[in-house]
Image (tube, rainbow, N blue to C red; front, side, top):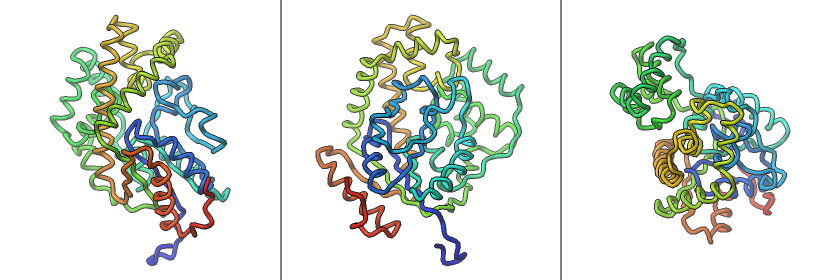
Length: 327
């Protein structure tokens, strides 16, 4: 309830953190404790048939907790922050109406932040000719060269976008081309006033341990059949140029399968790029406000971390601790 307006804001729980930090396990325990329905805040887990490379939660791992925005699109269907916002605008009130707590879990910073603070994005129309021109430039000179073009006019956005994320790099260039204003300036100008009663939990850990967990996870993905998963997608006719197949794990393995890049080199590249991605995720989240940070470096202290987070959530939402379902 805001004193100024007297309007009750719906509660929204959010869990963020870099890839491989341990969000999935913790999210299930919290969801059971607070009777949540989870909304995936991951831009890649929306795609069907892309399970291993996205570290998608399995039905068994869900333990009966309802999950949304997982396996809802085909790989050739573009997902965007606007689509994510629109979906959340429907899901959050529907979950609340069921007497459940909406719970966004994910690592795609812009997606999560855009919902938390109801961002308004540029109304700039599309310039299809400009997009095609930039795509041809990327095809001819490489994604790094395209990314350098963005860095020259909008270093803030360039720092947050991977060179492989060609669609978003082109969109950032397009916004500048059409409006003369950078995407990063637009984001900086957002008021960051939330329509929700927010409780945002951020997970962090020792950087070297995080990198070790990333490398171990990629080794496990390979054991689970990542190469076969990518081969299956390509065999179904999905282009390597799709946004989905430019994702980490898919792009590198596609280079192995289509260009003859030795698998060992593709894996080294994937591990390096994923470490860089995790670093960018942390940088993004560090600039978000309202986050309660929990250092989960010492995994053996999981029960203590869980108890600390439960107390934070209960305090934020005014829930007596004795009423929490402590699984």
